[in-house]
Amino acid sequence: MNQSEILVSLDIGTSKIKVIIGEVVNDSLNIIGVGSAKSNGMKKGAIVDIDQTVNSIRNAVEQAERMVGMEIDRVVVGINGNHIQLQSCHGVVAVQSENREIGNDDITRVIDAAQVLSIPPEREIIDVIPKQFIVDGLDEITDPRGMIGVRLEMEGTIITCSKTVLHNILKCVERANLQISDICLQPLAGGSIALSKDEKNLGVALIDVGGGCSTVSIFENDHLVSTSVVPLGGDNITKDLSIGLRTSTEEAEDIKLNYGHAFFDEAQENETFEVSIIGSNTKQTYNQLQIADMIEARLEEIYAYAEREIRKAGYRGLPGGYVLTGGTMKMSGVLELAQDLFQSNVRMAIPDYIGVREPQYTAGVGILQFAYRNAKIQGKELFPSVIEHEQESQPKRTKKQASPKEPKEKTKKESGIANIFKYFFD
Image (tube, rainbow, N blue to C red; front, top):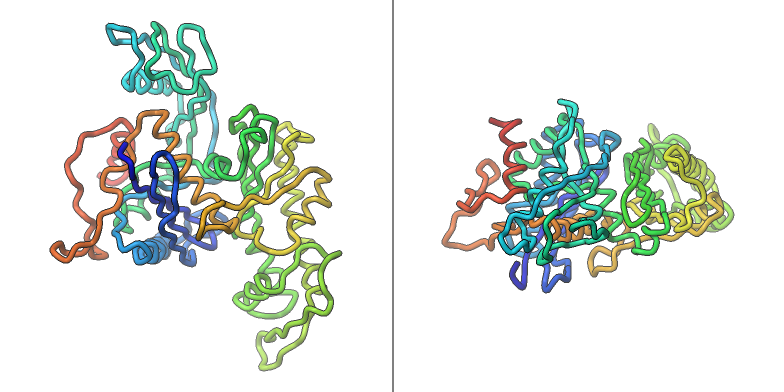
């Protein structure tokens, strides 16, 4: 990889679609562009209208393109949902080179060998995450390239998803005139940004509360061991406020963002605001204490469901505690309520990059960082023609015409993604 490379992440959420452009310089990530658009074709984390989702993706991409003056051609797509399944795998190969030095080809073959297992026809393998490599019995190796050995093993986790859900995501991205350079599991991506190595080793729960759903992920011994999705999020709080205050959904969302407080004990009674009553021309005055009661009740339910998912996975009293992130976590009082309910160490995770210092960007920034590191371990190529500068001498890509693909050598991961496209679109 060269000194400077460009990666683009696409985070398709229920309330917002976010595009983040990152520049990798000497293994260090810099955020150079951000675009976000209201997500109109999603409900509870699933695509319900392809055309609206495509338009939302285009709007977010255009916003990011304007910020950096470049044209986005390829993206790393985040995927999430209850259809995701994790499965342990193990591969063994003999080192092929004459001098017995382990190279990229050996890594590729051992990862391929680990995927030789029975998978239901309705499911698709989206990635294989190595936990450790073993060279002639020596374990806990993270990167065996350059080592000398005869027998190479890999223990890892295979990530599978529903072909139907993957098909819908691929179709939306393809219709937005974008190519997919990689597919990334969002809980893994979020964990790479939100969690420290010590937390992941001890055992920690990452709770990502978005607009339509909340993702609960458990990490232990530095690896993701469980992930599940609760179909409740910030949109449910907005709906509660809309019903309770008898106002429109749009005004309820504004009130939640500007005056909302999730912890009743710390809400201010003197913080007042006016609300337009739906179906009439009148306005009514409310205070923060009155809406805090509604917000706290719904968020308490979300936290209770998250705790139930953690216990279903067989975990109680995680030493690393709980880490909160996601767009809904911007609201005041969410951390204090979590500390009061969980009776454990709880903290908030926010990306430490200029321009994206909000919890809603954790997954998007994590996709960039995780995809880059994972590509290095597996020897995948992410970078050809990620972004091209717009030039006056070249015609600009239109909405109905995708930019032409440049001829290039087929890498292992590209051929895998290409096969998925071939399966669905040929």
